[in-house]
View 1 (spheres, chains in turn cyan, purple):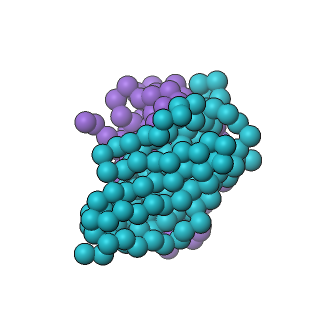
View 2 (cartoon, chains in turn red, brown):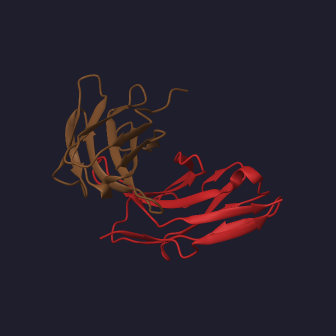
View 3 (cartoon, one colour):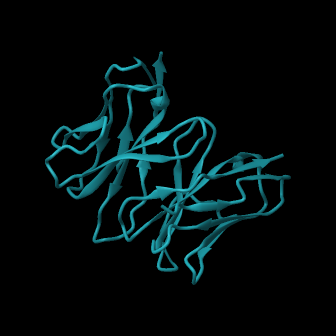
Length: 117
Length: 111
């Protein structure tokens, strides 16, 4: 069974600084997707970034980037120039890509990020 | 850009009552997913539909049922509600097996 582990229940960062959130996963599959979702106090689930396992290049979206280490099954999220609006719960998620089927997301337990002014 | 619409946003029910949650996917998205998020927990997959057919089933209780209609909207029907069913219910949609985009959720409270 596939699992996703986020070992940091809570993290804190100073405004304008950089923070890295960790995520590891376990799978025997080679074709899959990884995601980071952000859930602010409004509880809306917002896609932050997505990575396709067969792509070696790390995904980047503005201030958000990932460090994808496929062999180590690691998928960390780096937030640069942290802003107060980045404060939220961050979930790492995995989806197996099998024959074009519509696989569901498997989430980690989440990391609560606080941003200090 | 259009997003996933869920209704109602909040719902309060008594134990043993029935609830129906509705989801309207992003236009042209053909796949709908339902997730349940309990307090302080990560979302758990319930069920999904592709082109109006059930495609995957997760930890959905037998008291719950769902379907996707010809206009691609989906409904989650929950009967014999229990206190433990109190949660945030998300609907997400995707085009095929691509990235899932979430709706704002329906907060269900069972008293």
